[in-house]
Length: 261
Ligand code: ATP
Image (cartoon, rainbow, N blue to C red; front, side):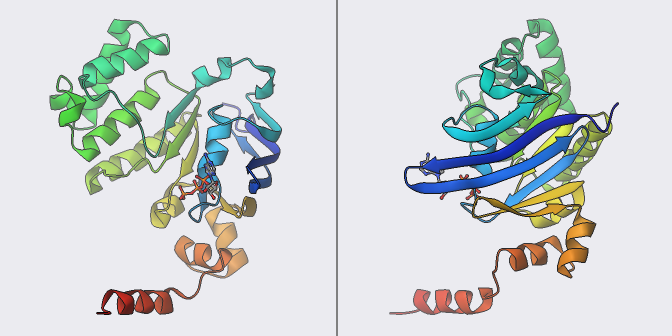
């Protein structure tokens, strides 16, 4: 595994929605095997970045190179090497887990038998084997989330985008998922992890990129960020870099309005 191989390069990425600039010149490079914690306040532009990278959102300026190829050339083959868990996903509720996962697997070029074997085995290992043949409509939130995680991995992607992937997972499942992430990275997969759960981002990321107002406000390992900002936890670093220090006054004011008659 060549750990110096550039998987993704972004140069001066800019995106406007109408008159609003959402991304104001983002540049960074991601190497094979990195787990990037991509963080920022609500509305900072994280999902917009990921949607552009996945080709869901167009109309941007700047250069994006995946696996050494500029994605603006119209060749979408690079998407075969990508897995994605969106924050909010539409799944076909009327299908069973088996029907959904084999359908996704076949979309990515697996045979039905291979997709079925992989999907069933991964569902079992993730503790949801018993609902493999049940309709997704009957799944709990955590079961749906596990289905989404598995569907993003069936085709053995090189690069993974996870947007709040542990939403709804119980504590044991989070533990398994964190180990899976570390193992994927150890096997040379690259992970782009977007979340607001700072203690998890702090623990799993080999590098953290913090977005503020559509610009990169910090980029480095947790240790580097800690050293630079003289703060103890990623939550504190986040509060400092996003210029947030008045949570006590805000919450008191909030409750006082709740109590107004
Ligand atoms: P969150 O943490 O809340 O998920 P985010 O960092 O992912 O936030 P984005 O969803 O990328 O933020 O949104 C960045 C900005 O772009 C926000 O101000 C949002 O209102 C705006 N925006 C996003 N999508 C659209 C759209 N389709 N049309 C107009 N504005 C949009």
